[in-house]
Length: 76
Image (cartoon, rainbow, N blue to C red):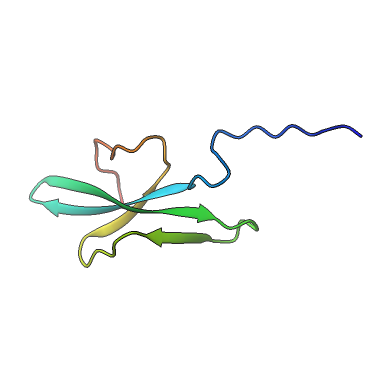
């Protein structure tokens, strides 16, 4: 029986997205990491786990390329 080799760039429990809380102060944006999201096995949704629940601003999901927030603000 042949073995299938599956290569992944992330560990099995690594999040698919990082959740960032973004607030606007004048023309400057402030990004704070607040959680992570994982894709469901059937591909039909996500599980979002927040370490804190912001009451203002917005939550942005980004690929976890690294733990630093984006330098430029992207469209909503």
